[in-house]
Length: 161
Image (tube, rainbow, N blue to C red; front, side):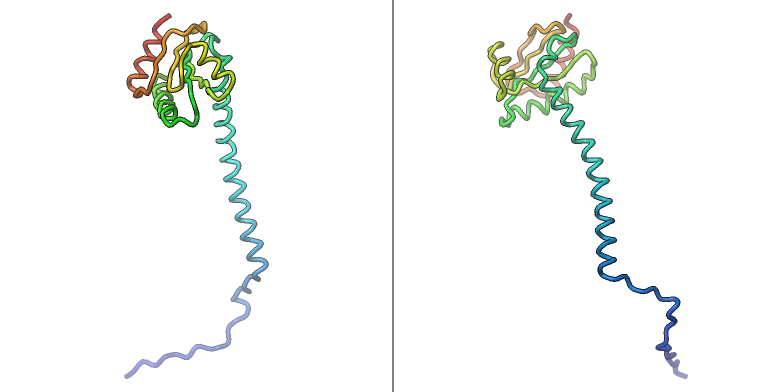
């Protein structure tokens, strides 16, 4: 015997089915959701951006040389790929040393202060100048260096009094 299909009733209960949302309401809900997601994303991104800008401003403050902490000052041209490569290696070595007695600063040669510092010490870009706690230049490291070599130089610089 063959199974017979049941015929479904075309009548549906109006109380169980939800009324579909209108296109205007759906659009308003999507806009509200997207706005909330964007607000959260911007607030999180804003915190990171503010911290990044604060760190950059602190790095470029050359008046910190001689403030009682040894300094690594990179003579830097932001448009030079070798300078950016040296900056990556220097930051990695600086973080590896992890001493509160050492600070990393950037002398941008495109600014008056940066170019004056470079001229005063007779150096060009792609160079690191290591200053003691009182602000006296103790060592000049010209050219690109790898992070291991830089870390060793920074640790030796900290041991010098």
